[in-house]
Length: 398
Ligand SMILES: Cc1cc2nc3c(=O)[nH]c(=O)nc-3n(C[C@H](O)[C@H](O)[C@H](O)COP(=O)(O)OP(=O)(O)OC[C@H]3O[C@@H](n4cnc5c(N)ncnc54)[C@H](O)[C@@H]3O)c2cc1C
Image (cartoon, rainbow, N blue to C red; front, side, top):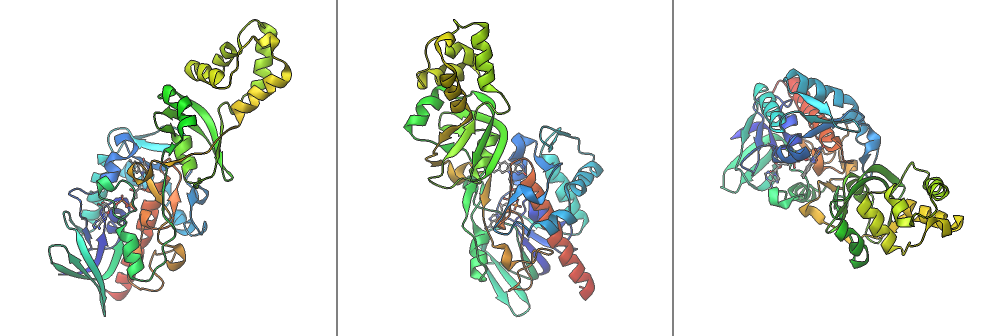
């Protein structure tokens, strides 16, 4: 069977590209349903974009690469599409847009767009091999069936959540066709810690508070969650993208608060109060008690000189921790790194060395922050690729 375009991967980027690449496009996926990551995203409500999405919210070896696609298909374009399909949505926090109902509405919308554009979808279709021929590509399925196409789009995502079928297939294909792949690492992932930190965090599992977490020049003010395995919550997931083995992270448990001033006021108001009790006015009770115990903070405020209050305030603002590792691809929301952008055209996502071969979505070395940015990259890169293919086909009358 010959198709003008075959897209490997019926995820966010693949479906978006299929909606724009023109009739006769075939989308193949080894899963039994399309858009499985969309379905589970955002706790089942899909954080489908971010009102403030901008190139600064993405990590890549070349921070300029994503600019063109993000500018040509923006969050406002996707919001328009969602609205046209009558999908109700709301802003949860920090510009993050979620469906009011279910993430399945986004999948249904993409499938409807794809079908309206004349593209076909084949599920349960694992790909065994891809080969380049004189006029295009051959895709050989595990069943032995051979399909050919003029253009091949690789939208098979990254390595995160192998239980859902993530394989790193895109990197193998890139390698096969001589495209460079940057170092890949799990990102947007909880960090794990050694026994000294766990002694504090484990009993506090479930406690959450707003915090500022910093590492390697990046800093995020978002919720911090204590867990049985260490620390999680949006601030930790965000910083995990900037953290490398052996780096320490810095946690400010009370950003935007004058902690020293608050402790001095508490001392002036009631000097007989224990330091631990004064901390409960600043931190969640369980954390205040555990923090005071771990740091040996006993005694009354009246007997605590300014220098010691300053030390306590400094400790809360600058808690230095060295993670032992991360939970890895098992729970990582995305893969950092991927197909190197210097091998791709930023307007079309086409390989510079292998005409007709495209890489889009998470497979590419463009990784967004937590908060709807990764889907926006999938929509923008999928749109850039799909419209480029459609335009070339129109020009060639194909
Ligand atoms: C739990 C979780 C929650 C998330 N929540 C959000 C969120 O709310 N907002 C946000 O912006 N991002 C979120 N993300 C990230 C987001 O899901 C990804 O960035 C996005 O799905 C990437 O799109 P993609 O199309 O590149 O890849 P994917 O969506 O992963 O799609 C790849 C497709 O390729 C198929 N495939 C893989 N290998 C093969 C193969 N060898 N042969 C055939 N098919 C193959 C897969 O079955 C899959 O359908 C979340 C991720 C996870 C894991």
